[in-house]
Amino acid sequence: MPHPKHRFAVLAICFASLVQAQEPAAVSPPAPPPPPAWTGAGQVSFLRTSGNTETSVLGLASELKYEGTSPWSVAAAVAVNRGSVSGEENLRNLAASLRGARALDPRTDLFVEVAYAEDIYAGIDSRVGAELGLARKLRIGEPHLLSVEGGLGFAREVRLPEKVVDNFAFGRAGLTYKYVISKTAEFQNQASYIANLKETPDWRLMNVAALTAALNVRFSLKLSHTVSHLNTPPLGKKKTDTVMAAALVTKF
Image (cartoon, rainbow, N blue to C red; front, side):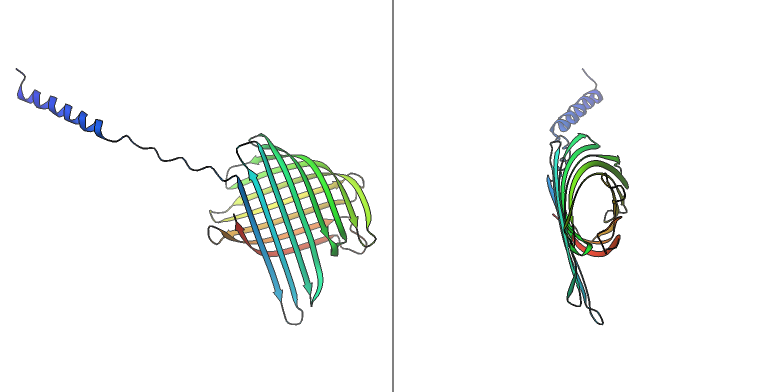
C-alpha cells in the first residue's frame, strides 16, 4: 500500500495538471494594421500687412500619393501662389507634377514624371517637361534619412514678354535629406539641379528647406525657405527668387 505522503504527492500533481490544462492559451497581440494605400496632405499659407504698404500673399498646395502592396506607386502635387502690393498683383505662379514609379528593390525606384509650371512675373509663361530617372534611398533609419535621384528629360519653355519658345533636353540631379527631431517635429531639405543640355549656361537650381511641427494628430505648422535660381533668366528679370512662408498643413 502506498505511503499517505506519496498518495498526497500524486494527487497534487494530478490537480496541477488539470488546472494548467484548463488555463486559456496565451493570446498574441494583434498585428498592427498595414499603412493606408492612399495618403495626402494639403496646406494653406497667408500673409497680409497694412500701413504704408498693403501686402497680401496667398498660397495653396496639395499632394496625393498611392503606394499599395504592389511595386507600383503614383504621386501627384500642385501648388498655387498669388500676391499683391497696394492692390497691384505682383506674384502669380503655378506648379504641378505627376509621377509614376516602380520599385526595383526596397531602396531603388524607376520613375517617370511629367511637370507643368508657370511664373508670370518671373518671365515664364509656361514650362512643361517629362523625365525618366532613378531614385535611390541611401539611408532609411531614423533620425537621419537621405535619398538621391537623377534623370534625363525634355522640356518646352515659353518665355515672356515675346513668348519665345525653347525646346531642350535636360539632365537633373536631386537630393532629399530629412532629420526626424522628435515624434512631432522634423526638418527636411530638398535640392534639385537641372542642366540644360542644349545651352550649357542655362542651368537651374532649386532648394527648399522646411521645418514642420505637429499641433495635433491632423494639423501641423510648417516654416519654409525656398531659393530658385535661373542662371539665364528672361530679359529684365533677376536670376534668383527667394520665398519665406508659414503654412498650416493637414494630413489625410
